[in-house]
Amino acid sequence: MTTTLAIDCGGGGIKGSVLDEAGTMRAQPIRVPTPYPLSTSLFVSTLVDLAGQLPKANRATVGLPGMIRHGVVVTTPHYITKSGPRTRVLPELVTDWEGFDAKSALETGLGVPTLVLNDAEVHGAGVIAGQGLEVVMTLGTGLGNAIFDGGRLAPHLELSQAPVRWGLSYDTYIGEHERRRLGDALWSRRVARMVEGLRPVFMWDRLYVGGGNSRHITPTVLARMGDDVVIVPNAAALVGGARAWLLQTD
Image (cartoon, rainbow, N blue to C red):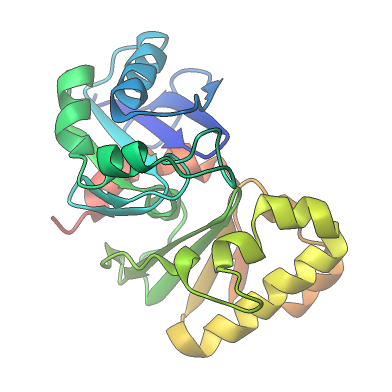
């Protein structure tokens, strides 16, 4: 039986579990706070320490926020800051993270073949039906997104950094800070406006909305979002770790 160590890396926490080939968890998930300031070496050691508390797996899948191409970090929004999301960006961390070969570093640290993807891509791998154009958006510290066409992972677009209004990016427009500031009702309306604005851009067959904050979307707003929008559990962020190996295009 092939087992997969699945690690979901967020702005506030890093969690992991071990899954079998069917995506069933073989161990209770473990979560640790994301340490800051987070150098690439501290990142790797944090994941290695987390893995050491779980059963040994044959391979690993790691989901990271930001633009990841072929296991290499192009840019990541939270891990270059002094104390976490919305704090001061440290130039030395920008240099450290940009171009960081996370796949190679983690394969060395974990000692198993490792797949490194954007975190929303891993999340999506756990929920898509594999038919038509399926878009995944995750609501958490910021916005994550992934696109699947006929069950195959499409090249990543970092939608979170696109401008929306008032000088805000999607990351800040519907991120956790704004949810807390506005309250769930007003924040939910923002999410609905985002969905309506992006529907003609993607022309998706189905949109999956997940992430830890998807549960805060109010029932009234949910009822108006349309039958092509499906709310999915945050557990998919780990469950997708096993299935992601079948969906990669590399």
